[in-house]
Length: 293
Image (cartoon, rainbow, N blue to C red; front, side, top):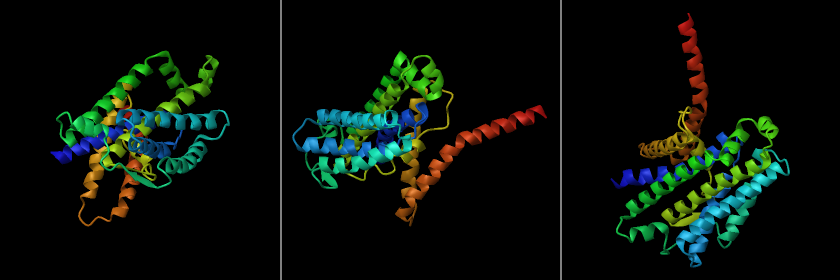
């Protein structure tokens, strides 16, 4: 039971990363890899602040804000300095590596020890440790889905989506495309840093390399159903993250598996997920041809 609950909790936490990646890669159509630095940034901020005596909830909020600042920097580099999106992410990611180490006191990893965390505070209300992690993970995921669903129905949300769909049309309608891109960068990396802070509190430490593979996890969590409302898509991402996590955990259980091959399995899974839309398109065309014969 604890294994299942732990898997669900990790899947729900990773779904927040997946939603952040979805905002830039799918809605804005921007290949942003700042996530690889924003994730450990959130972890570094929350652990360092908790060790300094800050309230865990406040420290978690600060981690989210730090991620938004990282997104702001990437957004400014891309829109104002006209640096290509992929290179923008590399520049920010490189800078964040040093910043994250400095935040942690010039060490590559930092332990929470016996310090309080949001999960421990929930557990003190009578929940088990696993129950506290699952409850907060589920609450965060549902809250993120609700807030983003409501946001996407507002004028700002509609403009944000139109910016990714058709930039020339958006500009023709008076939309400040650069501002919308920056907003998207900030929301995306804020969510990813939030997830990093929660993982750090669950694991009990922060590590400067913890963001490696974040983009792969985020993209692999996207399920293959696209004809849904925005709320449905976000929920489907959550399901995809849980399924992805269960697949990876089962891979770890393969007897005599070389652990160095896990990232290879990650890459294969990502390739299949990215190829799936094209496969669906080909099957649809083939079906139409068969009906017309």
